[in-house]
Image (cartoon, rainbow, N blue to C red; front, top):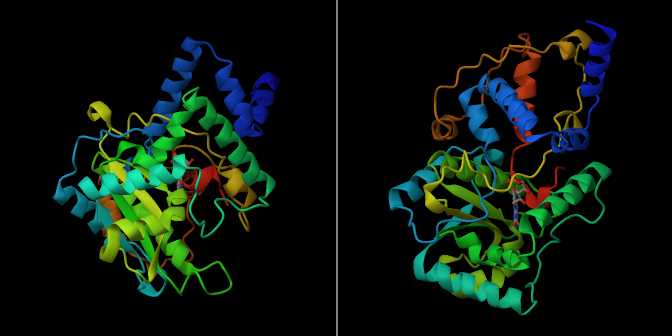
Length: 336
Ligand SMILES: Cc1cc2nc3c(=O)[nH]c(=O)nc-3n(C[C@H](O)[C@H](O)[C@H](O)COP(=O)(O)O)c2cc1C
């Protein structure tokens, strides 16, 4: 390798996500197309499940008039059954809301939004003092989202209309185990996150878009008023998950709409006790077989109780798993 090439390599290896964003923005249309094709070729080498997971993004505009068949809703909920939870507690209750009740629920939330009332927040939307790396991600997200919204600030209101999604899944948690105990970090919240992710991937695999909405937890009172006895009194709303088909039957895996940038694997990973030579190995080691769809993977997942400890996991396997963490949805674009 010549001196120029190794300088180039060093530059790339040290590039931050922002450097890469700036680089891509500076390309001509032709150059960008060439780069996209090259990346696509690399991406295609990844197993199918990983590729599908990387494609999951929140949908910002649903087809409001295309109803979701009952069997499809059941399939999404079936995907939830195999989710791991602390001591297998499965603490979630999902309230399925569609049709006239969904309309009423959204109207009441919109009215509160229009009146400037945010409801009683059970917890702040985002932590106050975030590590610099998280703050950077949130700031970048705010900027990108602002550019996406353009002049149409009314689009913010669309969240209260569930982005037009005909199906709204209300993810509820029991009071007590999570709200009133200290320390405030409780396993129940982890379980709820897993539940949301599993339902999102199941829906996605069935060709539906999803949008998780933590901010709706503020309207717990409205949910209780509208859903009455279907909304367990001793529970509270953790998150809304709006689900629906996309406009013009677009495939959410191919047309994500708004795609915020993500931190790099190294931004969110600390490599400990990893052999320096092993860390350097890159290449074509990703050979994992994944001919199954995502829904199959979600349904068939179980914790492994016997592991072959001496057998090392190849760097590329691990890196590709960690890379997936960059694509999971999260509140406000944060990454803890
Ligand atoms: C737990 C959780 C809560 C979220 N809450 C909201 C929300 O209240 N409002 C909203 O517009 N988006 C919400 N989102 C969507 C995130 O903003 C979005 O997932 C993130 O910016 C990454 O974008 P992507 O899903 O397109 O990759 C939430 C996502 C998660 C996982």
